[in-house]
Length: 367
Image (tube, rainbow, N blue to C red):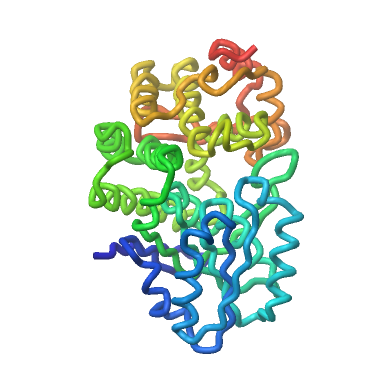
C-alpha cells in the first residue's frame, strides 16, 4: 500500500510524494503522462542498468515518446560539462516546452536533471524518481537543484519544484549497505532538528541494514513529512529551511577537502559527522548539554556512520575553515552554522566567530 505526503507552499504548485513498493511499474498511470508527450529519462549508467529499461517500457506503454540520457555515476557528474551534455541531449531528442524530464537516480541525478529541467526552454516539468534512501528522504523533496564547482558543493543552481516524487521502496533492495546507512544519517538529522521522538525511534533501530520494509517505509514517510513542512513554510531558505542544513556546513567542508570522492566519504557520512560536530560545537559553546552530543554520536556510531574526524582522514583546521567560509550560507565573510539547544531543537546561528570554530576543530582532532 502506498503512502502519500502532500508538499505545498505559497510560492509553488502543490505536489505529492508517493512512497511504496514497486511504484516504477505504475509510471504509465501518472497524470503527467499522456500519449505523444516527449519524456527524457536522465539517469546514471549504473542505475539505468538496474532500472532503466523497465522505466522506458512503462513510459512507452503509456504512449509517451521516451528517450534515455545517461551520464557517468558519481558526484563528478554534477558539473557544468555534464549539465551542458544533458541539455544538448534534450535538444537532440526533440524535447520542447511541453516535454517532461524524469530524474531516475540518487541525489546527483536529481540535482543535475532538476537543474537541466529548470534551464531548458526556461523551465519544463520534471518528476523525481529517487533510487537511494538518501534521495528519497532528502534531495528529491523541496525543489533544490544544483551542480558543484571546484570552490564548493551546490553553489550553482535553481529552485525548481518537481511535479511529483515517486519513492519506490523496492529499488532500495539493490542499495549497497553503505548507501543505506548514508540515507539513514539524513533521517537521523531530521529527528535532530525537529522531532526528538523520531530520533529516538531511529536510534533504537541502530544499524538500518536489515530493517523490515514496513519500518523503513514508515520512517521514510516521517522524514518526508518533516521536510515537507519546512519546505512549505520557507521554499527559498529565507529562514526556517536553513535548519535542514544541520551538519552540512561542517560536512560540505569535509567533502570538499576530500575532493567529493565518495569512496572516501559519502554525503550521508559527511552529514552524520557534521551533525556530531554541530552538537559538539554547541556543547562547547554552552548551548546544549554535553550529554546531547554523546547521544548523537552514539546513534550515528550504532548506525555504522563516522563520528570523529579521525574516522575519515587528517584535516587542517584552517583548510576546513576556508571551505566553510565559501559555504553558500556564509554572509560577508562571517560563518553561519545550524546549531542545537537540544535534540529536536535546532536554530540558525549567524556571525559565528571563525576563531572559535578553529579552536573547536583543533580540539576535535584537526591540525
